[in-house]
Length: 178
Image 1 (cartoon, rainbow, N blue to C red):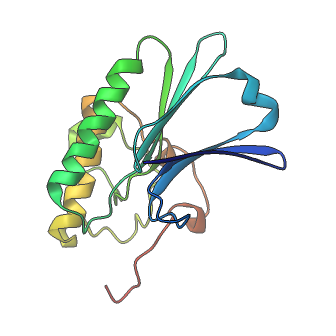
Image 2 (cartoon, one colour):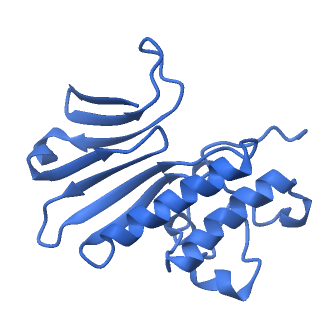
């Protein structure tokens, strides 16, 4: 696991990930303004998919940064990642403010059950073209793993709570012919 801290301009980058002769194949990072670096209590680069940073405030705040597997990865790899996220969250929640942020590679679109009501807001991506029943098995696995985490840990998907322009709702879109 490659770990890196780099200060450039107004920001300090904390990186955790794979490294092959300085060519990063996967990784997760947290970027902090230099003026806040002195408030950092702890940085834990866990692997190329997870890291945490704890910031000293009145109530310490821990940010768990996630870069989840894409749909094509093996189910066991994806399940193991979500178990790790859960364990890290359980370790930090209750003692401090905890936020889980990142790219979960999950297509939410709409609430598929009553359980999901507490997790998903009304501002989802492509809500006028709901395709949950058309998702392939691997895409559905990613959605289900993410929803299980949110329901089990009583999390809110904040990206669905605020109205944004369509081009700000997703980090990647599949080509329309897929």
